Image 1 (cartoon, rainbow, N blue to C red):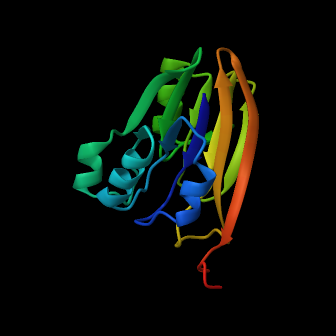
Image 2: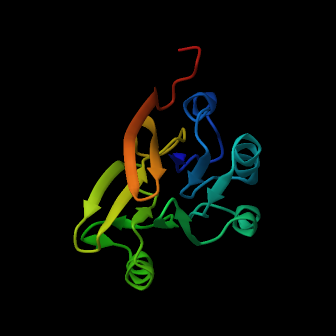
Length: 169
């Protein structure tokens, strides 16, 4: 199973996302979709798992959840928007990590790509950065990887556009 991970789209899906995620089996959106149209567009394109983020309105929150806990292959996955990273988890994320004990932890919010193994909690932490046009990031990013039974492989960080630039630039 090939997974595409995206976050912090802030109301817009760059056309390049469809190109980079053409071969994925599922898309995971780690929050701050920005509007319901982003959720609907991505759901129409591929199967979608999505959580709401701090900028999302009632329509996005009605269509998504605060966090998701699910299986991918034989791996337990926890996804929440504001999560943090090893040694600096948000209080809510840490509570869920300690209770649910995921193998893969996915979050967004920081706009900073980060893939790191947390030895203390025995899990892979994934933040895809930001695929949106607004925020602190300079380059729009996505993640893509494979999950087969107990194996996570072929992790790719995809840098696809300088923020603020269009196809015409």
